[in-house]
Length: 219
Image (cartoon, rainbow, N blue to C red):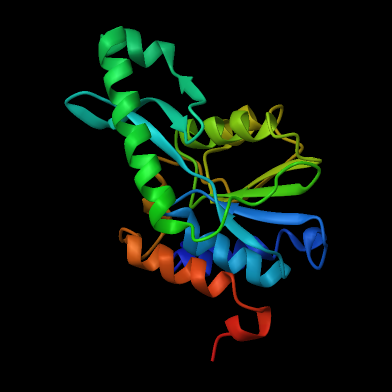
């Protein structure tokens, strides 16, 4: 099974989240940038507000595609000790990469958000990304969000490995993975179009999400 693109993935994911539709307590949070088009479709289908929640992967110096952890905008950091050891990442390198990614988080926060961050406390929070590979970014988001005392924390993604999904089941109140292919390999393999999401696309979807629901209907 392949998703046509992130919008298609969001629509299919929303079909598995109907218990959260038309509720005053629900907030959909997207992990930028790839999670935003998915979350937009989810929020529209559930008739729920949407916001972004900013986290960044921490890449091994010289091999940035290999994540040794992730960091959230408030500084909460999750580290993968096994990768740090095997890649011989020093404490100084960990700190340097963390500070660089924090600066990027602050830049994106100013770029994407025109209003103050949405209230998390006592709400049902659905955190959406376009898929889970190692889950490092999502784990950082979950840890940071827990500190803000949501009533219920839900992770929802179109695709992930069964192993990664299992790892999250004890960390959140509900977990929805639309498909869990085996073998999994990588998130992008399960999309026909997995092109990079631009800052402009994120801003456009955030603006559309802030409008009354009727204004966001597709023509």
